[in-house]
Image (spheres, one colour):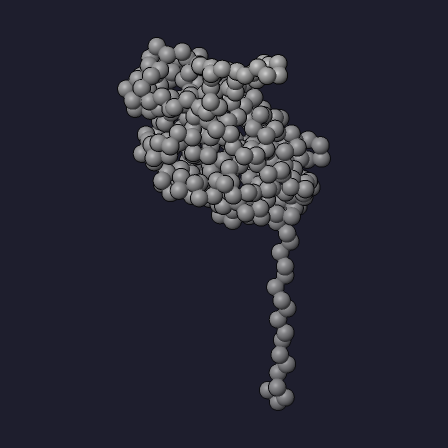
Amino acid sequence: MLTPPAPRPERSGWDHPLLGRYLDQAPPDGPVAAGGGMAPATLVGAYRQGAFPWPTDDPEASEELRAALGLAIARGMIPRIPAPVPAPPPAPSRPPGVIDGPRTGDVGGGVEDVDGGGGGGGADADLLDPPWWCPDPRTVLAPGEMRIRRSLVIRMRNSSWTSTVNQCFVDVVRHCRREGPHQWITDELVEGYAELHALGWAHSIEIWDDDRLVGGMYGVLVGRIFTGESMFHRASDGSKVALVDFLDRFGRAGGVLLDAQLTTSHLTSLGAREVPRAEFLATLRAVRDDEVRLECGRLPVSRLAPPRKPPPARLRHADPPGG
């Protein structure tokens, strides 16, 4: 069984024709835009452009970040992404023979222009959520490039674990939330990704020990690039097995890059590499409209490390007579 094809993306504030060129030259290590909310159209539009949300529910940090974002927008340094304009309500029915006259104030079904000058330091805080990031360089991992320790290979070969795709998406997202009083996986973000999952854009991989969830990962699939948002483990190596399993399914489906977003020593140890943002965005634009459908049935983890075939037997030649 395969995941359903992704739907046609809806229009959003990320469709502005200047945003692509702007992101090629945007700040390398800070927010590149703000606003637009967590509506599915905005999230999909951002991922199709190469940006991702990175909010926080820490009130003090949020206040400081919003102040900085408002100032940057007021100075024209970064754009404010408008929220999608809701479709107007249907016009009331008219009796036969009555013709409507021209009306003013109707929305034509499009979106607002990207606001590069408004929404300063005094802007409504909701207009600045969430902050969007598009770092340079970008960290990626291609199918077949992951470095797998011998101990992990042996563990998978002898494992009774199984894996699924999209079995319990929201549970995986919530398991990825870190312990502590403040989260970057906010409640609003969980709801936004749950909507993306329902529409066929966001996916999860789950690792099971019988009926116990021991590891997983989730992210957003745009064409042949999967942006991995987070992963977790509840048993040793659970997250690493989730990554190995996903890359196997992803590569077989025609995927080309796992976007890991930011570099960490852990990701580097697994084989992730940095590429210039311009190179990543060029690849994304080339493959974001391609169709990739993942195998989502339950599969044994042991398939990822099949037993090694013994080397062919070497025949011993008999000594010649009299030798």
